[in-house]
Image 1 (cartoon, one colour):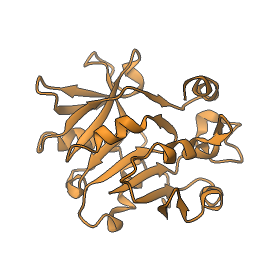
Image 2 (cartoon, one colour):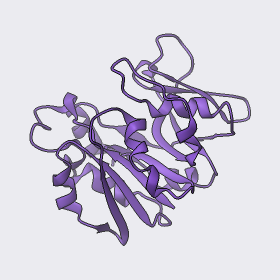
Image 3 (cartoon, rainbow, N blue to C red):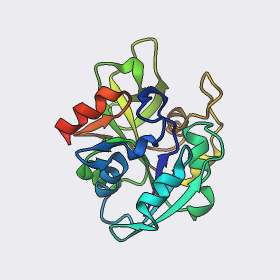
Length: 223
């Protein structure tokens, strides 16, 4: 199985830390965030497709062509047009097979990702006290996804989408959903796909997204 890791963002909320270094290379416990991500990939992942953008050459120089025996393919997102656009850059490499999608600057547990990949199509979710900051997964009694509402301004649950999915190329046939800045949003498109096929919700035991400088300090105590 391939893993597509989205690592093209500018990390504007982390400035000035990201003024000269891409967000995925910021260090926690002496290692870049992205290295933690690589180390937590399931063992059966044999190839990493890394979507790079802002100062992406630094990432390429740091990791080279492989990590832990897993080949790395680098694809540049030419413009910062959102998470689905970033994923679309990898479409030609996916060969019609299921693939794992991760956000390259969030922290996940290996065990959760292994469980996620145990289903043909799935989404990793974690309970949150601040649902207005995330895409929120709406689920049915069967434990399958019904929709993902991006940063809701009304109560619709507390299961945050972690940005980790197992998807198939069916996602590329979905109508593109745009954010307020015309960025292409992957999570609500997965919610749209859930109306056509069964997508299993997997509850994460741990997930920690990095959004602000203080999160780097908190992450050091958690990972």
